[in-house]
Image (cartoon, rainbow, N blue to C red; front, side, top):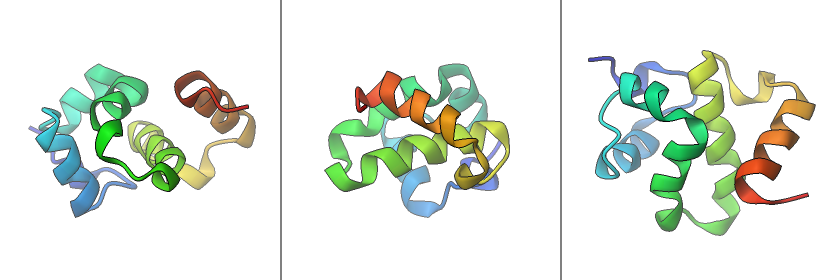
Length: 85
């Protein structure tokens, strides 16, 4: 079992939210992908934290800080999952 908090971008608060939603470890996060994992925790996220949280999950899966994800890829992910332009 891989600890969620060993992944970049995932601190205690996000790890706790993921666990409460049934994402107990890094393997489960990888299996779900960032979009599906995000949808599991979306209802309890403040509106202004949604984009950052989605990108944090994607960065965690890539093994990098979310700010290192190329802007075009960030925009595509946000549009696909959140429906934002």
